[in-house]
Length: 135
Image 1 (tube, one colour):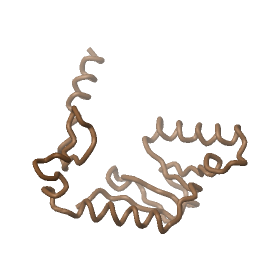
Image 2: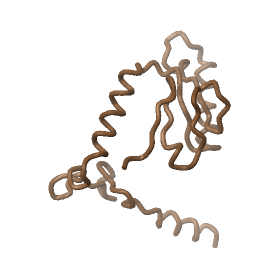
Image 3: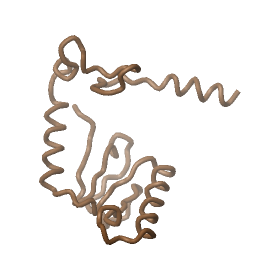
Image 4: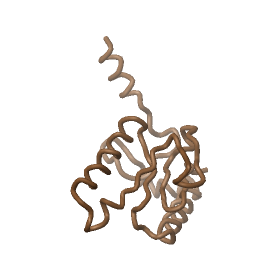
Protein backbone atom coordinates (compact mmCIF):
# COMPACT_ATOMS: atom_id res chain seq x y z
CA UNK A 1 0.00 0.00 0.00
CA UNK A 2 1.12 3.53 -0.66
CA UNK A 3 1.98 6.28 1.87
CA UNK A 4 -1.07 8.15 3.11
CA UNK A 5 -1.50 11.58 1.55
CA UNK A 6 -4.64 13.65 1.93
CA UNK A 7 -6.11 16.72 0.32
CA UNK A 8 -7.77 18.97 2.89
CA UNK A 9 -10.20 21.37 1.21
CA UNK A 10 -7.82 23.58 -0.82
CA UNK A 11 -4.88 22.63 1.40
CA UNK A 12 -2.37 19.87 0.90
CA UNK A 13 -1.08 17.58 3.67
CA UNK A 14 1.68 15.11 2.95
CA UNK A 15 2.66 12.25 5.20
CA UNK A 16 0.81 13.28 8.37
CA UNK A 17 -0.66 9.85 9.07
CA UNK A 18 2.78 8.29 8.60
CA UNK A 19 4.04 10.17 11.66
CA UNK A 20 0.82 9.92 13.67
CA UNK A 21 -0.13 13.56 13.30
CA UNK A 22 -3.70 14.72 13.60
CA UNK A 23 -5.55 14.90 10.28
CA UNK A 24 -7.98 17.80 10.26
CA UNK A 25 -11.30 18.17 8.47
CA UNK A 26 -10.85 21.82 7.50
CA UNK A 27 -8.01 24.32 7.32
CA UNK A 28 -9.96 26.49 9.82
CA UNK A 29 -9.69 23.80 12.54
CA UNK A 30 -6.90 24.14 15.13
CA UNK A 31 -4.12 21.74 14.14
CA UNK A 32 -0.68 20.66 15.31
CA UNK A 33 0.27 20.89 11.64
CA UNK A 34 0.93 24.47 10.51
CA UNK A 35 -1.59 25.57 7.86
CA UNK A 36 -0.09 28.35 5.74
CA UNK A 37 -1.94 30.52 3.22
CA UNK A 38 0.60 31.07 0.43
CA UNK A 39 -1.65 33.26 -1.73
CA UNK A 40 0.75 36.20 -1.23
CA UNK A 41 3.38 34.17 -3.09
CA UNK A 42 1.18 33.42 -6.09
CA UNK A 43 -0.58 36.73 -6.66
CA UNK A 44 1.13 39.58 -8.49
CA UNK A 45 -0.30 42.37 -6.33
CA UNK A 46 1.06 41.09 -3.00
CA UNK A 47 3.48 43.30 -1.11
CA UNK A 48 7.06 42.32 -0.44
CA UNK A 49 6.23 42.41 3.28
CA UNK A 50 3.37 39.91 2.80
CA UNK A 51 5.64 37.60 0.79
CA UNK A 52 8.34 37.78 3.47
CA UNK A 53 5.79 36.94 6.16
CA UNK A 54 4.72 33.80 4.25
CA UNK A 55 8.37 32.85 3.76
CA UNK A 56 8.97 33.33 7.49
CA UNK A 57 5.98 31.12 8.37
CA UNK A 58 7.26 28.41 6.01
CA UNK A 59 10.73 28.63 7.57
CA UNK A 60 9.34 28.32 11.10
CA UNK A 61 7.14 25.37 10.10
CA UNK A 62 10.11 23.57 8.55
CA UNK A 63 12.30 24.18 11.58
CA UNK A 64 9.68 23.46 14.25
CA UNK A 65 7.54 20.69 12.73
CA UNK A 66 9.23 19.51 9.53
CA UNK A 67 6.24 19.87 7.24
CA UNK A 68 3.11 21.99 6.76
CA UNK A 69 -0.22 22.29 4.96
CA UNK A 70 -0.65 24.92 2.26
CA UNK A 71 -3.76 26.71 1.10
CA UNK A 72 -4.26 29.60 -1.28
CA UNK A 73 -2.00 28.01 -3.91
CA UNK A 74 -4.45 28.53 -6.76
CA UNK A 75 -4.27 24.93 -8.01
CA UNK A 76 -7.70 23.57 -8.96
CA UNK A 77 -9.14 20.66 -7.01
CA UNK A 78 -9.48 18.78 -10.32
CA UNK A 79 -5.72 19.06 -10.92
CA UNK A 80 -4.94 17.94 -7.35
CA UNK A 81 -7.35 14.99 -7.55
CA UNK A 82 -5.87 13.99 -10.91
CA UNK A 83 -2.33 14.07 -9.50
CA UNK A 84 -3.37 11.94 -6.49
CA UNK A 85 -5.10 9.51 -8.84
CA UNK A 86 -1.93 9.11 -10.90
CA UNK A 87 0.16 8.77 -7.72
CA UNK A 88 -2.09 6.04 -6.35
CA UNK A 89 -2.14 4.26 -9.73
CA UNK A 90 1.67 4.24 -9.77
CA UNK A 91 2.11 2.97 -6.21
CA UNK A 92 -0.63 0.35 -6.63
CA UNK A 93 1.49 -1.39 -9.30
CA UNK A 94 3.69 -4.37 -8.52
CA UNK A 95 7.18 -3.49 -7.29
CA UNK A 96 8.72 -5.07 -10.41
CA UNK A 97 6.79 -2.62 -12.60
CA UNK A 98 7.80 0.36 -10.43
CA UNK A 99 11.46 -0.65 -10.63
CA UNK A 100 11.37 -1.15 -14.38
CA UNK A 101 13.18 -3.69 -16.53
CA UNK A 102 16.62 -4.49 -15.03
CA UNK A 103 15.73 -2.15 -12.12
CA UNK A 104 16.65 0.90 -14.20
CA UNK A 105 14.17 3.02 -12.21
CA UNK A 106 15.72 2.14 -8.84
CA UNK A 107 17.02 5.16 -6.95
CA UNK A 108 20.69 4.83 -5.96
CA UNK A 109 23.34 6.94 -4.21
CA UNK A 110 24.82 7.75 -7.63
CA UNK A 111 21.42 8.51 -9.20
CA UNK A 112 19.06 9.83 -6.50
CA UNK A 113 15.97 9.89 -8.74
CA UNK A 114 13.41 7.18 -9.38
CA UNK A 115 11.67 4.62 -7.21
CA UNK A 116 12.84 3.50 -3.78
CA UNK A 117 10.95 0.46 -2.45
CA UNK A 118 9.66 0.30 1.13
CA UNK A 119 12.68 -0.12 3.41
CA UNK A 120 15.04 0.81 0.58
CA UNK A 121 16.29 3.99 2.22
CA UNK A 122 18.37 3.59 5.37
CA UNK A 123 19.50 6.48 7.51
CA UNK A 124 22.54 4.68 8.91
CA UNK A 125 24.89 7.34 7.54
CA UNK A 126 22.89 9.90 9.49
CA UNK A 127 23.24 7.84 12.67
CA UNK A 128 27.00 7.56 12.14
CA UNK A 129 27.20 11.33 11.68
CA UNK A 130 25.29 11.93 14.89
CA UNK A 131 27.59 9.58 16.81
CA UNK A 132 30.72 11.33 15.59
CA UNK A 133 29.23 14.75 16.37
CA UNK A 134 28.43 13.70 19.97
CA UNK A 135 31.87 12.17 20.68
